[in-house]
Image 1 (cartoon, rainbow, N blue to C red):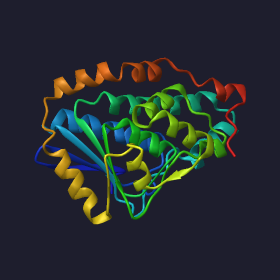
Image 2 (image 1 turned 30 degrees about the vertical axis):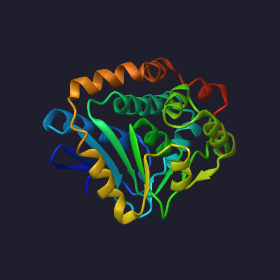
Image 3 (image 1 turned 90 degrees about the horizontal axis):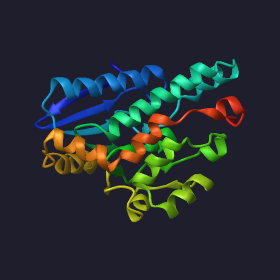
Image 4 (image 1 turned 180 degrees about the horizontal axis):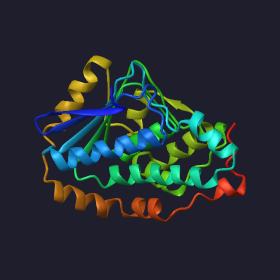
Amino acid sequence: MPLIDYIIDENVAILTLNSGENCFNPFFLQSFLSVLDEIEDKTEATTLVVTSCHEKIFSNGIDLEWLVPVIQKGDVQGAKEFFYLLNRLFKRVVTYPLLTVAAINGHAFAGGAILCCAFEFRFMRSDRGFFCFPEVDLGIPFLPGMNALLKKAIPRYKLEEMEYTGIRLTAAMCQEHHIITQACSMQDMMPQAMAFAKPLNKKRAVIQEMKLRLNKDIVHALDVEDVPYIESGKFNIG
């Protein structure tokens, strides 16, 4: 099974994350970017729905089993290149010419939750799964581009609580604070996400231009930022 695959249902491309806990490492990120390219170049889809095949996890974010050894052996350039690649994925989603919907069928932790914030709309399973940023306990400060993405989707008062405390939010709590579009039972999540996605049959060129204008500050942050805390010693995992 490929790390990531997709099917087309009318005007909707349904992209499925198949890599276990869907943790971010270079292989996963490159695969994600390649599939996004293929959907744009080889299909007529106008809306993208992203979900996971894992029974209880959407994505657990950065693959620390891959990243920690890279940092511990002093490979600063390798670590930086990983974060630049991660920025490429975030930027690709926020400028993608299709409207995007995250169908969060389980836990979205750390980078997985950040990725969800890059989408325009979010549906989340109500009976299982948390939306959480545990970086404060892992010793990983957020990069400027990450914070720009989070501000796109999360009200400032709630974002500060989430970043500083690592609180875990349920789907109901996310809906209460307008972080997601809809909390759904597992059996209803994909049908509701698809019912929402199919009418979003908009022209790609118009959508992309609107995204570029609306997300200009996010794109700028993702383009210009460096990863200085890797060299400064502030990146202390654990």
